[in-house]
Amino acid sequence: MKQFMAEDFLLSNRTAERLYHSYAKQLPIIDYHCHLSPKDIYENKQFRNLADVWLDGDHYKWRLMRANGVEEAYITGDKTDKEKFLAWSKTIPMTMGNPVFHWTHLELQRYFDIHEVLQEETAERIWHKANAKLTSGSFGARDMIETSNVEVICTTDDPIDDLEYHRKIKGLDDFHTKVFPSFRPDKALAITSDGFMEWVHQLAEANGQVIQDYDDFLQTLRDRVRYFHEAGGRVSDHALERVVYEKATKEEAAMIYKKATAGEGITEKEENQFKTVTLLFLSKVYKELGWVMQFHIHALRNNSTLGLAKLGPDTGYDAMDDGELAKPLVKFLDHLDRSDCLPKTILYSLNPKDNPVLATVIGSFQGGGEPGKMQLGTAWWFNDQRDGMLDQMKTLSNMGVFGRFIGMLTDSRSFLSYPRHEYFRRLVCDLVGSWVEQGEAPNDEALLAQIVENICYHNAKNYFNFPVHSLKNA
Image (tube, one colour):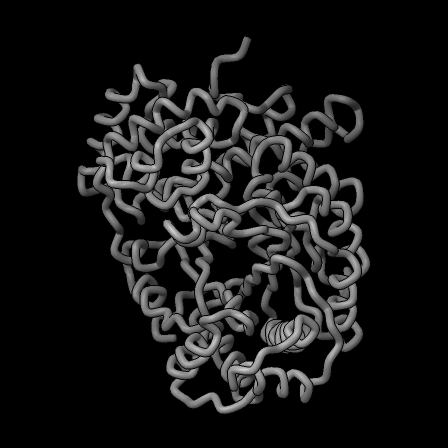
């Protein structure tokens, strides 16, 4: 019987142990998609206690606490931080088998040197030991990042953001992690949302100009992409609840934009035409600048009307969607490919049934001498657990080129989330090690080390082409 979460956690054979400890463990982290606050990074945010850093805003934990019967007052309500932590300590033993069970204990071990199992009986000791470090004044947000050996962070940023804190971070002489913005223009496509026109006004203000028509709208979006580029941005990100492709001319999209901004209703077909033309335009801009485009697909968000009304979005009321995917996605990518305007692209789906679809779709658009140009994105959100990660990697290895996979990201708002990279790296090593032990891959140390190190670090470093030097005056 192995000790709980000891040195060889998730490593089921000797080859896996050797690969992890000799090659994967010490590699820097490139976190190319997360939701950390640039302001918190710059200010090296200090946290009041373990509940503040652990539970505030963490909808993964909130969902589990609700499922365990915890009253909302102890989750997002007015109970004290300690009362919320104690409620979590009673919940965590019930989550055995859930990735959050493992992440919780990895975080206790790696950041606080606490190797006890969190439960009601140990909660008081863990609370005081972790809080002593958190309130020492020397363990803020930046300290957590550096403790985790993070080389690059890509935050998620609205086109209207002025990127003030990204520039301030570049001016820090004692912080060596590079923090770049990612361009997240979801609101630019949300033409039927109540807040669309207000956002367009904010976009115009951010760019210092008036947006009078669709041409101005597109030009302003192009300007904002270039603004992000000058600040070191090399990645876009799009949350596509569903992929649409509805053929239309730019002139037709302009008329749809004019109708919507005049307060006239538009049909579903017109909405899809606008989204298609606008997203194709942005994709071409990304290609011109050598960016990577990310599509996060099939999240069914804000399912609880009551939860959304009370707490707002991103509070734990989301699920997987199961809509049509292959045909509209292929049409969209093929449109770009025909005119040599398809940028490097990463496709993620929240529904794991889509992984074989995405794996074969990306295989249709590889080429141009770019290794792994089209990527099957790592197991995301509900899937970033042992089975989900292994299934994604096995799908990729069965249908594509596993050795070009760009690996893990956190997709997190928490500064304590970096052990997720460790979790992933252990699984990579265990998968490759299992192939070797079963005679399905050669026991070639140099080859194995290359595959593991590339997936855990080098592939991402080469794929994104981030600026080497800090652009302090960008």
